[in-house]
Length: 324
Ligand code: VAH
Image 1 (cartoon, helix red, strand yellow):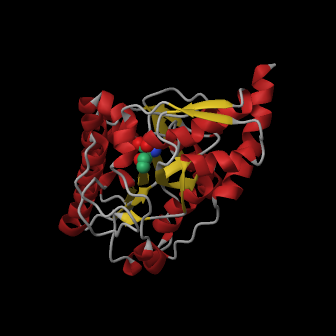
Image 2 (cartoon, rainbow, N blue to C red; image 1 turned 90 degrees about the vertical axis):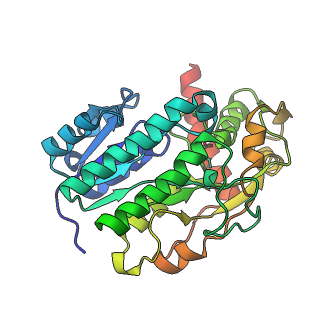
């Protein structure tokens, strides 16, 4: 299926994934063909100056529809979400943004017969009853966080719009995503981003989960690759749509610390587990991503060593210049 030249809408474009996905989409489809939106104003000049940016609250269905009309949008990457940690502090906000926002996008996409909608999910859909090792894609989904509840519901909503209305909705279950372009957000896995800033700036970090906490993680380049590979896949090759497990690496906090110490030998990590320990303990240690590999050729490229080296290489000069 050839992609028409009509425009692409990215919601949550200032977020951790949106802020790196948007420039890649603009590189691919043309700066002016990718409309970046977020409830916040863009901090990075790249987002603000590289192409169209609109302030947008995804809970405002009329505002979404007006942007889709104005720019003749044909594909939506719906990245706006409240993550797990913030979602436990503000469960009502998480419900509204994650589900009313998604429902608005799906209803508009259905009404306007849009080409394709990307609706991300997360390993947060799993809960304490889910098998923790090589967690299958089809299994018990009883999350214990509001974020996880919204993501399970989001997967079911997406599949409903595929089956009931023939809308092309796709999604992957992102693991913890590690990236260098935005500061750590409200996610439980964001310790794995924050630790790099502290390792470079003070050589010390106090982690909010235990050293033996193992979680599935992914470096941003692989996260973007998975997103685009799924969206490029031929519809006929997909048996599943909105709930693909994707894996690249799983590691414990102490394994990450050991890898960082290969570059910064003086680095010290201390531990003060907080409410996010219970969230992390409810998620799997590793996931089985055979369906993604079989149906659309998923293959990660980064591992713990190459991610760590690249993160430090990207962050060091930026943090050094910001200290001047
Ligand atoms: C979070 N980074 O920590 C997100 C992610 C698997 C976790 O969805 O909430």
